[in-house]
Image 1 (cartoon, rainbow, N blue to C red):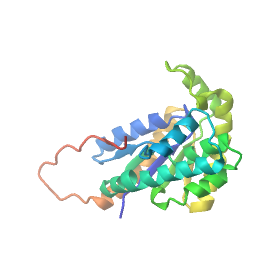
Image 2: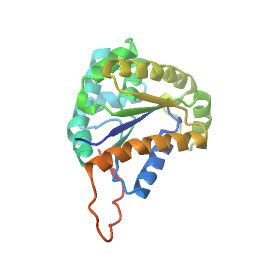
Image 3: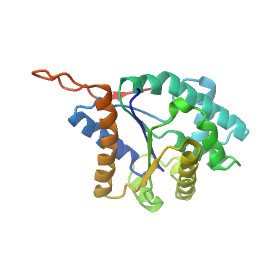
Image 4: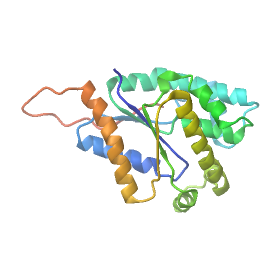
Length: 231
């Protein structure tokens, strides 16, 4: 049985990276060997070219072209990164299917559920649990304003509000299509972070324990540091 794949989703500034880093620290403290990866595999030059343009806010020539690039990249992600990684232990994905579906829907005249359904065909990439951070866009905007880097296309306030709505629709579509849960919770306060970290840690701990039942030894070695996967 493969270990859990946990996907962290939400608009820029919602707290995904903060939650990811908290989980990587907590799992290390608890002796759980966890790896982490990103949204895309970047293993196909053709798909990468399309996805790079999408991330910059440039739509593809058609919704089909955008969908095909995203689906091909996800298939490669599942085959060469996600599946081997979950064979070894739990994996945290910082963005995955919902983030891709919302980006495609933002830029193309298809409803978000159509992109979710297309991407869900890649069953090997299904996360067992998806966490959607529903931090208000105004809070996210305040956080982004403090960053030293220039805003990206998806970080503009108006775009962030559109994406927040699309994420809610995508979460509904994901559960309707796959039957898998989406945990929705804001990442606004320290208490929010503590709550989410505890819930996620429980999920990661269960599959890690099931996969690796430790033998009793006098002195256990230190767990390895978290593995970063993908290009």
